[in-house]
Image 1 (cartoon, rainbow, N blue to C red):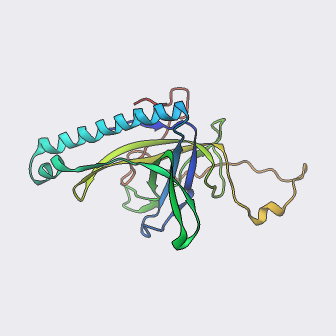
Image 2 (cartoon, rainbow, N blue to C red):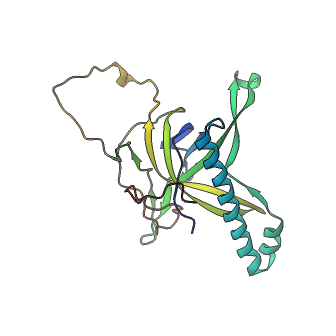
Length: 231
C-alpha cells in the first residue's frame, strides 16, 4: 500500500475542504483541492518531480500485477493510458463565452476524498470530514475558505483502472492550514470584545479509520515521526 505523503506549503485553488463539492457527484460529494506548484520555486519543482517519478512507479507496479494475473484485464492494462493528477495551471480572464485560459507556467496537483463511506460493521453510510489543524498542530474548525489559502495536505496515492485507463488518484487524509483566505460574510460586521464568552476551536471527530470500507485514506500521524516527502 502506498504511504501517506505531505505536500510542501502550497496555495490552494478552488478548495472544497469543509463543504464537499456535489457538482459532479450528487450521491457522494467530494472534498477537493488543487494545490498550485510554483515552477520558479526550487522546493516546489523538486517535490513535484519526485512525486511524478513515484507516481509512475506506483502505476507501473499496479499494471504489472494485473498483467501477471492474466485474462482480459491484463490485455487492457498492457496498453492502458496513464493519467496522473498533475495539470498545467491557467489564468482565467473574462466571463461566459468570452473567457480565456492562459497557461501561466505553474502546475496543480489535484486531490480529493469522498464525503461518504460505508461502515464495515453496520453497513450504514456515514459522513466523513477532513481533519484540519493549524501550524501548532491544534485541531481547528472553520467555515469554507478560498483560493489562495496556503496549505500542507496529507494524502495517500492510489492506482485504479477505469474504462481502460490507469488513474493515479490522491486521496486527502488531513490538512494543515498555514494561511487562510476567507470570503466576506455577515460575521464581519461584529466587533471584538475582551470580556465575554470564549469558545475553543475544535474539529469534528467523524473521520473514519483506515479499515473502514470506502475510505481510501487513513488516520494521520501529526507527531515528530509523521511522514514528509518520503517517496
